[in-house]
Amino acid sequence: MKSISKPTIFDFIVLFTFLFFSSVLTYFSYSKTSYIQGDFVEIYQNNKLISKQPLAKEQELNFKNFVVEIKNNKVRMKESNCPHKICVHTGWISRPYQQIVCVPNKVYIKISSEKNYNKIDSVTY
Image (tube, rainbow, N blue to C red; front, side, top):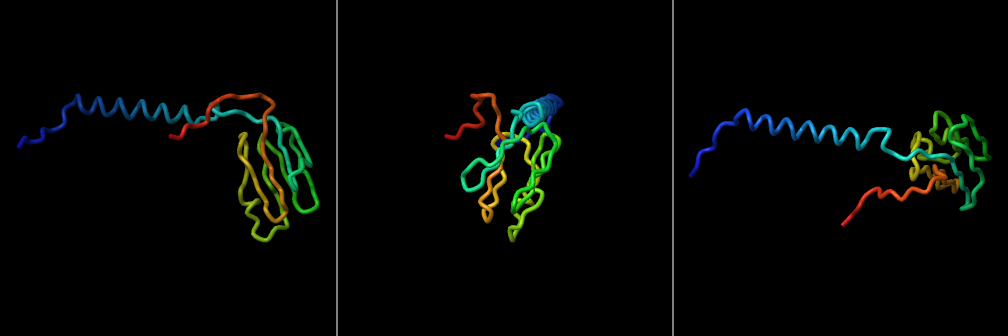
């Protein structure tokens, strides 16, 4: 049976290089410049579009059962009269394909973009 030798300086260099490049790759994969920026906030109630507002304009939209706030290119459900307030606790969303859903009020808020991106988000085998 062979004995295991102690790590050499070359082993540490290889390990450090691997960790460095994987850290850089992770940083650039999740940095703010790598995702698609949305243009509009679409608010649906009962599967009907009730409002489409620009994401860049700071405003507060008051509806019968809820209040939506748009600020700093983000949107959130500020207030709602639903019992558990899950939609309010969802917090801010800022990217296309993110959503806020309020089931009791039958409200769905999403961020959309006018640009047609054919970028693959992920692949599953």
